Length: 263
Ligand code: GCO
Figure 1 (cartoon, rainbow, N blue to C red):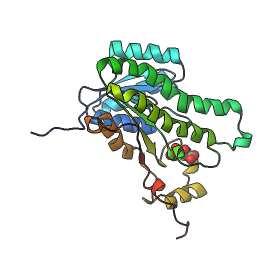
Figure 2 (figure 1 turned 90 degrees about the vertical axis):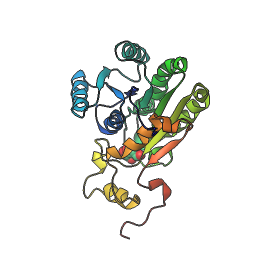
Figure 3 (figure 1 turned 135 degrees about the vertical axis):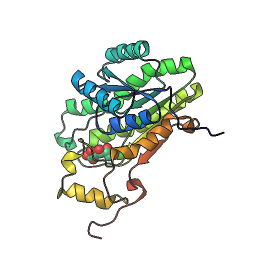
Figure 4 (figure 1 turned 60 degrees about the vertical axis):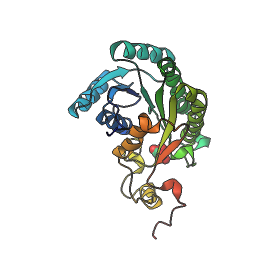
């Protein structure tokens, strides 16, 4: 008799910011493991509809839900609509995020606050309103998308690092308060991945591009699909006693001091 601890058949997963990039890759992973995906974005309904069509092309059952993750009223209304039209949320991935690159001395307070709002406050807002039903139903899974910047500083991304550092501790706090309801809250910390967000610093000849390739023991940028394994694990029965941890999927960056460029 074989049981598949990673099977997500019958599960409903809300993935914020899942119309593209890392969010879409992780959501597709959950979809391939059997889950129904609620695709969230806030830019345009057309972008969400196109994404839902792309999921369907891969044979994944997906529904769109356009809402602004930092607007609590929109979040509450969206969750109520999801529950009514699709079903109760079993898995939540807080992936929606932004980055604004600027030295601290030149950063506007409004920009700093916007990064904190979307990258740190919105996981709290969305989780707070999703978890209520999970508690009633006896369990659920929450995954917060952290970053190398949850552990490391880097010039020009301080607001982002402050948010991602805070998100690591919010993850541990959620685990502390909600584990007793059979809710597992964990994080995934992507290393440097080939996405639209990193495109400006991943250009051939750009010093940061060379630096990352030499700084990463795997010797490459991550492919968004490299996150699917960790996402499926933290969404499934296989992680029922895993709580408050961040899995870093980073090609080994955090494991090493790195080596000189030309070595
Ligand atoms: C940057 C990058 C990073 C990565 C990622 C690393 O400017 O340093 O954009 O923020 O996207 O978060 O884990």
